[in-house]
Image 1 (spheres, rainbow, N blue to C red):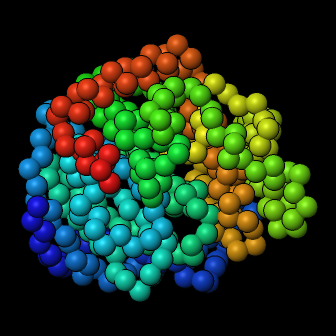
Image 2: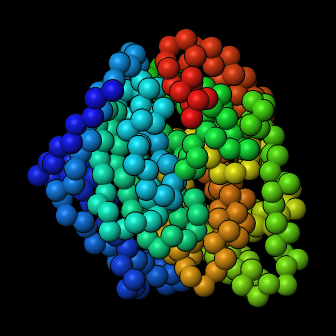
Length: 347
């Protein structure tokens, strides 16, 4: 692999998104129940890292930016140019790598094989876990969505709640579907699977990780849950829902068949506007607030409800199960056509 550093006069695709969050706030007139962070651009002379490696690119490629991969990371990654995602051959895909620390270091931009590119986004303060990154991304692309987006945690595929098999087979199949048969693709699919490679995408298995927060006597946790219920009630009102989201704020709620734990998923771009932008901004401000427990915010007020916010309930169990089974069979194609799987397993 060869890596070159370039310094363009302009940031390129996303100068406006390479921003720091200032401590000051102003009222957003669209959302009387929230505050909006003031954004300031970083300097536009941001280094571009050019990655060159031998990769088999996808044929019948999509237009640039048709697929976004959003990685909700925390730490500064000095070796992102070595990530296995660059070996997938997802032509013209744009990766957004969130960073929640070392804000004095400038954002970075990468260009890679097959027309792939990546942009590092700083999101300060470091609160709200993955929820804050997703909601921040949605404020940027709510009205200008790609064809689809894959949302991943900072660990990407190395966790108790996912696997290299699930991540690569499902994104690869979805990418292929965007090129060939868009109408037969689910609007939202989970990237969750057991780390032992169980591929049942319709199995919510995060129960052992859930806090019984509603029984907590901790003042901050209780206040967070109360504020979460109030916020989700307003989100429901904005989406013309009644008693759909609020009951799911609780750990023991009965969840729809299309729900999945752990909030890593693929989402079709046509679903972005299902949640009004003012609700997204309110949820983001809530996630970034120092007044609440970040873990509770990220689980009860995001992970537990995100599938009901965006999934299409018209996609029945049979339709979804057939797609997940097809993704499992697609794993052989992924293994034979790219080095990404072997590299993922070694990382």
